[in-house]
Structures are given as C-alpha cells and as structure tokens.
Length: 253
Ligand code: KIV
Image (cartoon, rainbow, N blue to C red; front, side, top):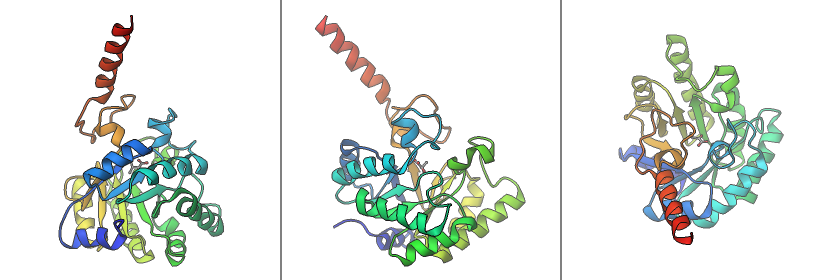
C-alpha cells in the first residue's frame, strides 16, 4: 500500500522525522522507494538538474508530467508529490484545478505542490475540496526568484517573519497537509513547526523542522553547477561516474 497523507501527518504527531527526496526518473525513484523514503518530490528543480536550465521557470506541465510518470513507475510505496510549474496555478482557479488534475491523473502523483502563502490560499482550498492533497512551499520560492532578487534566505526581518508565520497558518486552514520551508532562519522554522499541526519539511531551514527535503542530485554529488550551502553531499557520484567513464575509455583504447 502507498503511504497516505494521514500517515505523513501522524509521523509529526509521534515526533518521527520525515525524510523526503526528489526523483525525476524510474531508476532513482525505485532506489529511493526501496530504501523506504516516505515522500518523493518530482520537483521543478528538474529544470536545472535534468534539463540544464538556469532556473525552474522554464519548466512546463508536460515536463513535470513526463518525469512524474517515470517516478510513478519506479516508486510503489512512497507518496509522490508533483510540483506545479511556474504560472500554472495563478491565472484563475479553473486553470489551477485543471493543471493539478493532470499531475494526478496523467502523471500518477498523489499530491501537488504550488509555491506561495496567502496569495494561493483559495487555490489550495479548492484543490483540497476536489480531493487533491496539497503540500505548500514557502520562504525561498524559486519560481519568484526575479521578484526575490535571487536565491536568498527569507524571513530575516520581523515583518517577513510575521508574514511567513501567518501564511503557514493560512495554508494549514486552507487544508494543506504539509509545507516545505526553503531557506528560512532555523529559529523561525522551529517556532512555526511547533505552532502548526501539519508537518513543516525544511530545506536550509534548520534541524527542528518536522522533516527534511533535499534535491537528490545535490546530496548525491551529481549536480555540481551550483552547490547549495544546505546540501550535505553523502556521495560524489559525478566523480564516480567520471572515473568509471575514464576507465572504460582507457580499456576500449
Ligand atoms: O523543486 C524542488 O526540488 C523543490 C525542493 C527544493 C523543495 O521544490
């Protein structure tokens, strides 16, 4: 049986930390699933680590659906969350519902992740009313990088910290089953995680979140164009691959 959103929420209640990783293809999803990671994210980070774009902004619905299908074939147990790409949930509610439905129906995801706070609360409410589980994403929201002025820590001033706090409560009330906090000061994430009932999954948001998410290509040392400070490398796969390819070339020659 696949993990459900209730099981994810129950992990917070029993203070069991929640690991989450990205996957974009069949093989990686299968490995991550076999290890027992309960949440897999088909993130729009695939635009950077799989497709070579400089940001997540060019990623399309078709890109996410294509990769979500592959992940759904590989991961049989984890709950699969698919990112809603840039501007696929802002134009109007029916557009957001239609696009989220495609991720679930065509892609095979069990939940979707749009970025934002109060501004997307109505979208979250309507998606949840339609039976589509929603994971929020706040703090550094890469789809707004031009507005934010780059990949920067968010919530550092009292006003932005208060807004994050309020936005998290609004998304909880709107029915989100959890929220990703990206690049948020650790004490603020801790306070918010202690206040809301839904799991806060951090990335660069300190150790006291209810769970942690990483881009698999970062923690495996595969994507080396940009190495975020918060991404500990548990392997150096880019180097491993280079060594293997070098050995192969030498043997062939
Ligand atoms: O796209 C992604 O991989 C994400 C994570 C950084 C949370 O949204």
